[in-house]
Image (tube, rainbow, N blue to C red):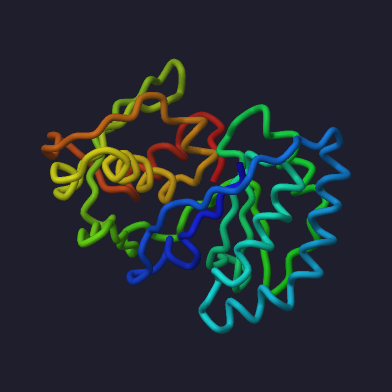
Length: 231
């Protein structure tokens, strides 16, 4: 089902909490990804005044229901978020989390997207933040500064992939979904969803800081230097 990634403006914010994803009723899968994408963009332009007003008032949850419905018309298993943009003020992200079965739908969605402008940019996978060291994630009462994340990285030069162990001082006190989220979130924030999926092979959590560990920005430089890795 469609999920609204509630990190709106929070992936680069020191103050926004990370909330659970919102479930949406099951929807049928469209037969024509292109037609479904065109339907989404018609709905987007109709909703845009409401979206702009909600963002301007700092209340993005006001448009959650309508956007969930619009994204579900593309495919019910997609995820979406509204983010701070890198080239524009805001970014709309619709992602299949690198599920190959969803790629035709995200490809069609991106192909039908309007040209970017000063207000909006569009992404079919979660992009990296400019500097993950500036991000602080809130998990209940726990504040996790990504600047404190350290990575043990082992490169397979033949396969051009990296095995990583993720350490943060707070990880030892986390369990279940919170521990899993804080293992993978720093990697996606640093590399972006697509590059992380392409170049990270094994991901583990390290309660103690590994010897020779590197920062997230050093991991970004390492991974981007592999083969034909994207930037």
